[in-house]
Image (cartoon, rainbow, N blue to C red; front, side, top):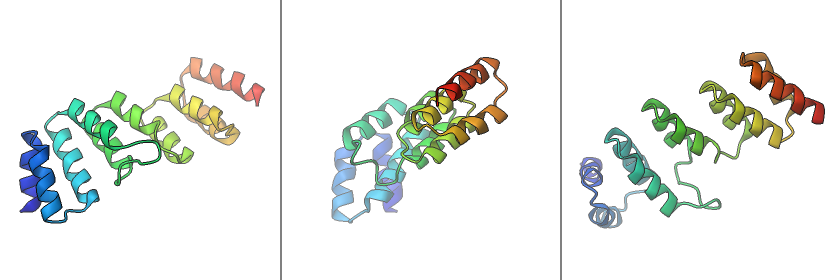
Length: 145
C-alpha cells in the first residue's frame, strides 16, 4: 500500500523519494504527517522528527495534524521532555493544563495558568497537586493576581 511504502521510505530516511510519491499520488498532508510522525516515533528517531517539525512548521503554520498527535506519541514512547516542549506550543490553555497535569509537570502547569491569569486553573492545580513547593508557589502567585 502507499502508506506502507511511505513508512519504509521514512524508516530509511528517503524523504525525497517519499515526497515524490506524495506528490504523484496526491497523498494528503495530514496522512503524510501521521505516517511520518508515527514511523519516526516507532523507530526511535526523535531527533529526525524534531528536525522535520522545526523545518516544516512555524508559529503561524503548525503541523496540519496539530500538536496533540505528536504529544500523544511522545507520551506513549515515554518522551516526557519532548512532550513538554510540544505541550507548550498548544494554544488552548485547557488542553495545555490537562496535559501538564496528566504528566505531573506541575510547575509548567502553574506557569501556563499564571501567564493567562487563570485564577480558577491555579486553584484547580492547587487541589490536585501534592508537591509542597508547587503549592507555595501557587499561593504566592494567587496573591499577585
